[in-house]
Length: 514
Image 1 (tube, rainbow, N blue to C red):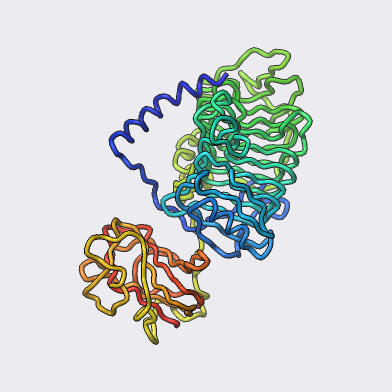
Image 2 (image 1 turned 90 degrees about the horizontal axis):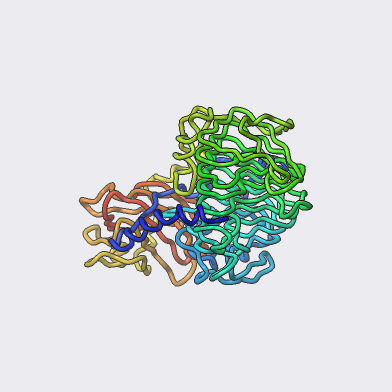
């Protein structure tokens, strides 16, 4: 049953092996520093989905740190944005206890919580063999992350084999610009990439890539589990999937502007009274892309504007009711939200440019031309506030303070950024790195001045200013110089260089109270 996935993986795995043998490091582009844009589809209903908007922003590079951020909130509903960078795996994910969380060591557990955003930043966030489990929770945003090779059998196991799984009274989840992938089917230990069951409603999966799996995902765990629905799938790529793209048991789902490529056994499987609205999708090199399969409990569909490119159809049978070879609507579905359709003919190109993690959060406006997001920076001062780039006044608090940071280039010192000498400098080992100033007791800082050494002006590209005590991002942007933010009391402040045109040289990292 799962042979097609395994066979098609051989070429890709061979390429990765050659790259590893040659010592090639594959890097991912810089991405937005926080969740951009707003929810779409059914996630906009039932009060909407905003995640942790308006809450504290913290940074996490381990699974344990994600759990600590959840457990460190005032309550289980306190909004929080968790920016994730690096590889999250079993080795760095531990259970953390607290009144505002209910976590587990073998998965990222969002259980009995609400108002949370998890967003990949920097060089990317990869959840390796570790799934994300959402249970008895609401108002969750997951954006710009990769989840790969989550197993339900073999070793290690996580989340029942689901990359992202939702169950038990889940409401309002928006999953956007993610890459969800496996390395085979059930016989290789994998289950679904995106599963919803036991009363999960108002969910949107957008601009995501799902590939190399026996099962794309399901809505409803059995023919009797019909309490799920109101799910939107748009601008996603399903590639090299055997079945369940998705499997829909009861409820309503809206699929538009998706690119389905190499669905090896079946695709959208509407059954057990389900209704699927299927608009302007592009189906390519696939089999039985729409219908009711593997059951005599039929579902229905409304179709419009789809393209079927090299699609084959099986003969109808007792447990098999393909919609093709000439799919026609057998129900009507009323959609409560507004949406704009790209023409199906351009879906492959639009989805290729937008779907998946680390694509710059690009979206489509229905013009068949990908658009870059226009996120607002929550750290921007109010227009009535003083200009944060005004020259700082008062005492440079860095003089006499301590310092440390990431690995440094030969011949440089952390202390060079706080010695008042523009002739000395600190330089990271590569083009990115971080430098910190620290004090023995809490110190109020509202402005910094990052001064590059002579000859290297303009090298610093993107940056973040981070409260090291809490992980909160105080400011982000591009280019060195004067950076202002709301006054904060801390013992350590960090300037993170996340992008540069060369190797930066920081002569002074000045800090000021105002």
